[in-house]
Structures are given as structure tokens and as C-alpha cells.
Image 1 (cartoon, helix red, strand yellow):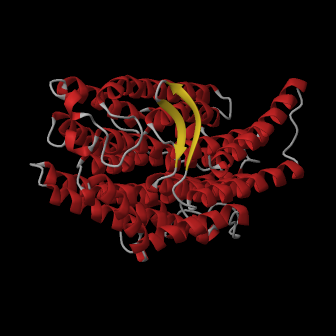
Image 2 (cartoon, rainbow, N blue to C red; image 1 turned 90 degrees about the vertical axis):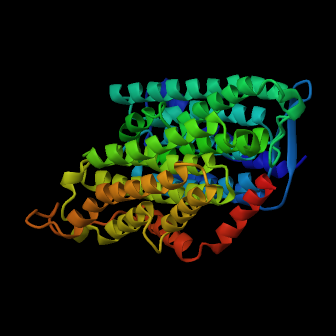
Image 3 (cartoon, rainbow, N blue to C red; image 1 turned 180 degrees about the vertical axis):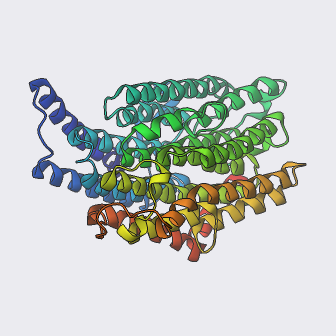
Length: 499
């Protein structure tokens, strides 16, 4: 047993539960206190220590840790592999930056103790989800992820927030039950539910039952795709993001939706095996749904005037880039999908945090109110511009590299129609992305006759909010200027699953 794995999951979880206990006690007494200096220091220390322990644990080597035996022969256990290590690293960096940003921002929203309680608890759950050693363990933490992230959506307590949170819960639970339905069949037709690079399908048992197994796998893809915002279970995203606090929106869009894609990758590449799906109706329907989501999300984002809702529709589109890359079942496309998971995590976190700055400083939520902000907060708007360049896929940003690999993978797949249709849809989506992101930059730096907001003085946010934006912008550039270390690491993952 490796105690570091347990500690990386338990430390933020216990720290979060203690904060929730404090918040609940204040609620019972009917006098919720302000976020005191002591609680703030405790939260900052818990954030830093939890991220440090998780990163140390992830990179100390291949380790396992068994928890208990659920059914005869099925363990609930953790195992660190290359894919889990990649997820924990990306999530830890984003989580730490969003956390310190939240220390300054959440005074604007209130109820900080409760927020950070769920925030820390959720980080422990996502660490456990990343380190899961089989489908059963992953499913357990996948359900917990939904239950613990829902309070972040309904944080304000408004009717709109409650309805959005219920919608998020309903869609996520329906998707998770679809995953559970498929797991019943995989248990019968696989040698093991443990994550095995290349799959663990029992071909002898499957013979003559291919149809039912393909249906079960498709239901799982559709179910886990709900968390990733894939059609037809996507509408929770534009409902939840505008009502949640901006840091919570960054969590949902930058990290949590990626775990829907991770669940699909684990199912297809580590349990079923890509060879079983290649050339089947499941692959073709999956590719159609992914490309429809890419185009539809970009088009709806282009037409949306509210910035956070525009970014939510953008997430619907961009995460389906990842799903499309996975659905091609070829190495280059999967490399592009994993690259885009990392790049999009940092970029979309940065975009939502930038939207939070606009709300925090001026209360602006609509794009047409953002004229002249370049004179008020030039550093913030330059960070936003870097994020816009990366999400559009313009060099020298990381988004260009990931989309290059996705397009190359599609072209090299040789799949009729989709080998050229995929790059075409990605290009059209990129043009729409530029169309809905760059007006903020243009109006911000070149407002024309519009008056600047405020009295003309510089109004950059506090360092706790500005530094995370600058770090995320630097990462978006660094992944485009020096992508080779990440590419080499991801190529090891694809080499394992396709060998």
C-alpha cells in the first residue's frame, strides 16, 4: 500500500470537510461570519499543501493502493499510470491558480467558507478519479464529483442558480447511469475491469454478442459525454456557467468537463480496446455527434451576447474537439485530443477568470459593455487576448499545436468522408471562435466613440487575481513555443494503448 496516494486524496477532502463543518455550525447558529484572516490563511495553506502532495505522489512512479474488495474479484483501488499523472498535473496547476484567485474574488460573492469547503473536497475527489485503477473505482468518484460540484453552481442560492444546479444534477446522473448500464455488460465480456492499455476484451466471450456489446459501449460514450457537453446531453453547460461564481465556472469548464472525456478514454482505450470499435456504427455515430457539437457550440457562442454564456457554449464546442480526436481511433488524433485537454484546461480557466475580473470591477456581463477596458486594465485584456489566440488555434500558442495534431490525425485516419470533413469543421469552428472572442479585444483596445468605464484611472485587479491570469497566459504560450516535452510524454500514452 502506498500511503502517499491515500494522503493525496484524503488531505484536501478532510480540509474541505472541516471548512464545511465550520460553515454549517455558523448556519445553525444563524450568524454566518465574514471570511476571517485565520480561515483565509488555513485555506491558502490547504490549497498549496494539497497540490504539492498530489503532484509529488503523481510523479514518484507507478504505484498502487487497494481500498477494499467490492464484489468477488473486483477491487476498489488506486493505480497511478501515465494518463492519470497527466490529469492530476493539469488539474493541480489549474486548481491552485483558481484557488488563489478565489481568495480575492469570493468576497464579491459571499459565503466563502462554504465555497472553499466544497472546493477543497472536490479537489480530493478529482485526484481519486485521476488515480482510479478500474471502472468501478472511477465510477464511484465520478458520482461523487457531480454531487460535490453541484453546490458550486447553486452558490448564490437564487432561483436561477437552483434550477441550473438541478439541471446539472439531472443530466450528470442520467449520463452516469448510462455508464453504469454499460459496465454491467463489460463485466461479462472483459477479462477484467482494471484499466489495461489496449483493452481487456475477452474476444472468445464476445463472439456472437458483438451487437449488444457495441450498443452498451455506445450508451457509455453517450453517458460520459454528457459531462463533456456532447450532443444531445449538453444543455446543462450554458445553464450552469452564467449563474455560478466565475471561479466555479472556470472549474466546471476548465477541469470537470475533462473528466467526462477521461471516462470515455478509459472505457474505449483501457477496457474495450480501440480495435473493437474501429469501422463500426458506434465510431461513425460518435464522430457525427462530436462534429455536430463542435459546429453547433461555436455557432451558438457566436450569437450569444452574455460573455460567460458565450464561453459556456465555447466549451461545448471545444471539448468536442477532444471527443472527435478520441473517436478517430488513430495515434496522432489521440495525441491531439490529449494535448487539447491540457491546453483547453488552462485557456478556458483563464477566460472565465478574466470574465470574473470584468464582473468584479465593473459588474459587466455583456460583451457590448466592454468597450474601452484596454485603457483601464491593459494587462488583464492582454491576458484575455492570449487566451483568445490559443482557443482559436493561432501560433505560437498551444491551441495551434493541439489542433494541428487533430487535423493531421483526421487526414491520416483514411476514414471515408470524415478524414476531410473533420478538418473542415475544425477550420469553420476556428473562424467562429475568432468571431466571438476577438470583439472583446477589439472593443477593449479600440473603443471608437465609446467612453471608457470609470474615471480613466488604471483599475487592474489585485495581485491574487492578476497573477493567476498571467501564469495561465504564460502556460498557453509556453505550450505553443516549447510543446515537445508534453508531446513526447503524451506519445508514450498513445504508444501504450495502440501497441
